[in-house]
Image (tube, rainbow, N blue to C red):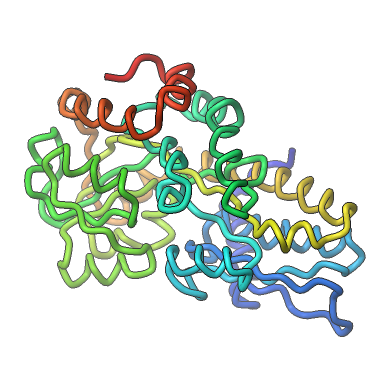
Length: 336
């Protein structure tokens, strides 16, 4: 496994990707297979940096037979739109949170059950193990491939322009942006908030114009999307974990010769593991950095959150089914 990128290395890598607008330049001779890969994060996020490196490596190792252009920041459309493009074959690869993939693969949202995971080690044991395998199996029935290693997004925190979230009561009627996923919406409704689903590409404007008062995301997303410019408070809640499945259109992937398929699988695993380390490194230091940028940081008392979520656990156990819920509790411990 490679070494995590230092901040200086990130700056260099980011400058390089900005210079090319994050897209691998076409070679003089056209590749045998020309595919597209999309994601919703800025070019300075580790997921983008490592994807550019990943697909460059695939291009090199395949002798130029497979060229994959990387489109960041929802350039090709919002998450729900690109998921449709992926299924139709207009896009061949796409990273998507399980909480949004749930619109097609209901069990995929299980990664985001509130307070299910205590740390990254337990999370990845689950997602690389029984929980992830259940999601991958169901994804395969929809004509998509969920590759072996889920990419890190991280534990999610709440930001606000109006007041800090110190306890669950502070969420009462709080207008919060969430991704367009049922589990997110239900979680925050259960906690007493007023969730509004908005794609990430539109979230900054929604916060700036006060369509919503706050949002929730991991530290690295708060930093790279510059939410600190339109949010005053950062409340550390770790209320749920989030990761991105690298999805492939099954027909497009199966059209590749076996040796190129092996190159893709090897490199997507390699760079996903690198990206996990990068994000962990960033998240470990970003609370202090965001405070220096002017945000007021507090650690919330989440004991009341957990108590409020008892009906949420009952409902979602029924939604996911006993097999998937038992797989989750194998790693999380008893929920509810």
